[in-house]
Amino acid sequence: SDGIALKVNIKASKALIRVIFNNLSSEKTFAKGKILKEINNSFSSFDNFKKEFEKIALNSNSDWIFLALNSQNKLYLTTSKEVSSPVIYKDKIILCLNLDKEIYSNREQIIHNFLNYVDWNIANKNYNSK
Image 1 (cartoon, rainbow, N blue to C red):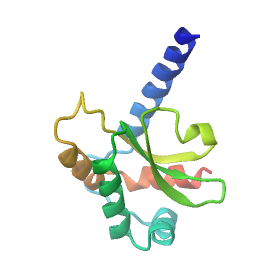
Image 2: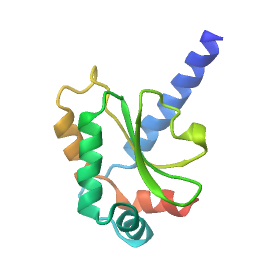
Image 3: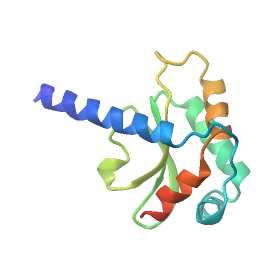
Image 4: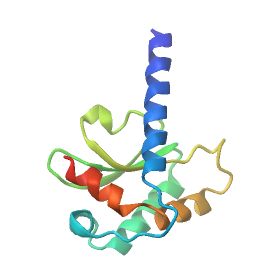
């Protein structure tokens, strides 16, 4: 059963790595449309969302941070050491970032760059495909 769990984790890791890179743009983009409206509803403002994302990511010992959509259509941030969360709750991943300490030496810079180069068009597409 350990072999099965490892295969599942490897497949989930590869899938999430694709999500991370699909969520990035070579140029800065800006949140707009339904995703911006829902971020504002869920976090009071886009700036609050960014601050919360950074705070959670920097203070977590987890390897992953997710912006996810729950069954009540509410966006939330969560972290996990497991690649399958929040999927195990049947929630939809809108954005994710891997923060593995063995890969990245400067988490703060990675988080800052990630938030500056999120492709919000893709995030909108992920949100709208619920």
